[in-house]
Length: 47
View 1 (spheres, rainbow, N blue to C red):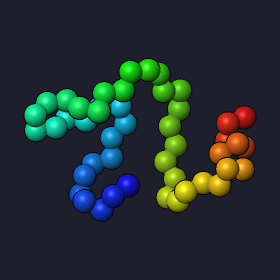
View 2: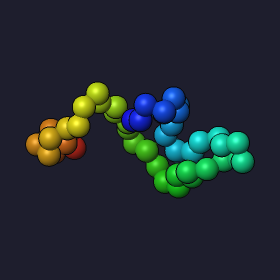
View 3: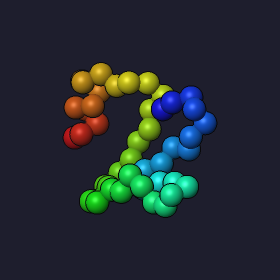
View 4: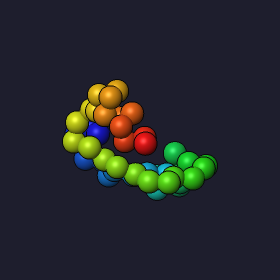
């Protein structure tokens, strides 16, 4: 996440020129962490 004042979005975002950053697919779950996860932590979360 940047420090430019932008909103956090998942999927698509409404831009001044219209919709952008389209996501085509399915999201089964979403988690946001306040730090980068280690490979081991990501593996544990996938099971």
